Length: 96
Figure 1 (cartoon, one colour):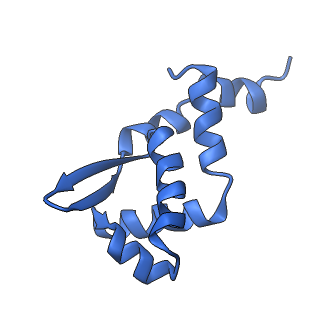
Figure 2: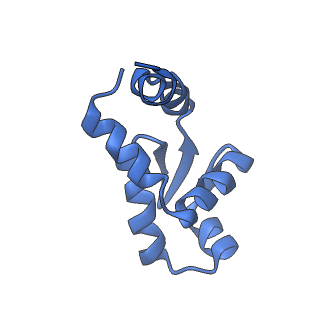
């Protein structure tokens, strides 16, 4: 189980609609380079880099450098852990 700080990072990363959209784009292709993300979102690489770093720090995506390109992919294990978080069950399902 992830520590409270790690859980907070995950939920902060998921709180921005653009980052949700980035996750959808990345998931749809298995792995995506920044150039494709800039094309699909219409955002600059520097602005995207900030949001990708938030997703990386939260462990929701991983980076795979290949030559001069960086490719991003979804970390499925992190999402499985989110759905299995004890604290979510305790927060919403505990009747005490």
